[in-house]
Image 1 (cartoon, rainbow, N blue to C red):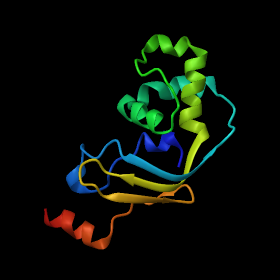
Image 2 (cartoon, rainbow, N blue to C red):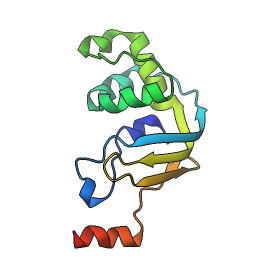
Image 3 (cartoon, helix red, strand yellow):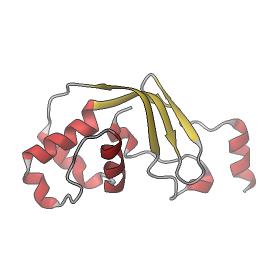
Length: 128
């Protein structure tokens, strides 16, 4: 799971609508990809990012990034390269995602987060 994917994910439980974000990442295995820097992609994804999530994940993986990001940062190529590296080159292979609201843990296996609810969780959401 790339960090870009993580930045757009939330808990799938009904009770967590609007509260289950950003998911906390626990990583047991990760890899660093070598994708070429894409200025246009990084510039266009910039306004869609949740900066609270970016701040949390950059600290977690020890990738220093300017957290007081403003529009002028779009002209700073070093900032954009660091952001691209965090979003596109860091991949979690195994680990888990935890909802900050309900503490539901979603496993990550072979780079794929399993966001499916168990049957009892589905029925619990229907009853509520």
